[in-house]
Length: 232
View 1: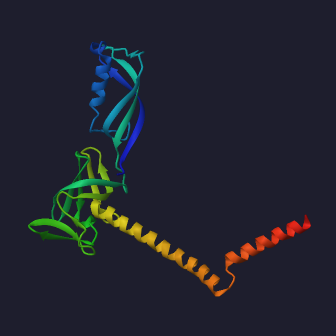
View 2: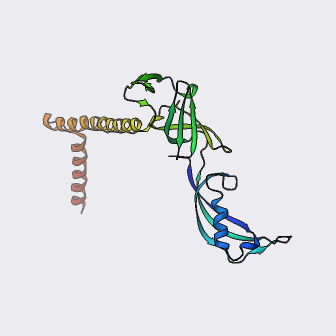
View 3: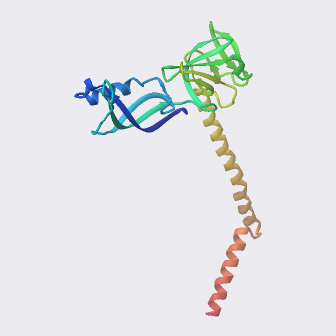
């Protein structure tokens, strides 16, 4: 899935003087406050972090409460969906007007009816609402289906994604992955068919007693060898 990235950052965390004897715990507490919130510093929603190094020399700030700044290097795992990237999520609600999805268990996404391609039609199936493909009856989206969709926009404040199922490579992940395997297998078979006639043609030339391209090359090579021997 796209939308995930790792970012390396050099940060300075400011610690209250009362925490001077618990610097490591104070730093981790500050970093933990960033989890599952959008940070402009690293341009993404912080999912996890790993502290690489922590500077033992702190800079004390002047003021009534002399906070001190601790420099550290951190690796962040970020959720940063950009327009036209692909995300994957689980359908949690489906109506005639929209499909609602949860991504990575925390971010909500909605796909409006106008952003669902015409191939899909809403219907009731066995008492449940589904979006079914007109061209392939096995391509069905319902509650619980894992889908792949395109990002239109991302609301950084409420961590809400607006998505689209307009492109052909979006829809049920199970169906898309299986369909891609079939297409890939068909392409390999087609390549074999294109190669096979060439082999048959060479064999047929040999049977008919005519010189094939391979025979001509071999005869030219033999003639060059003979000429080289005579000159020697």
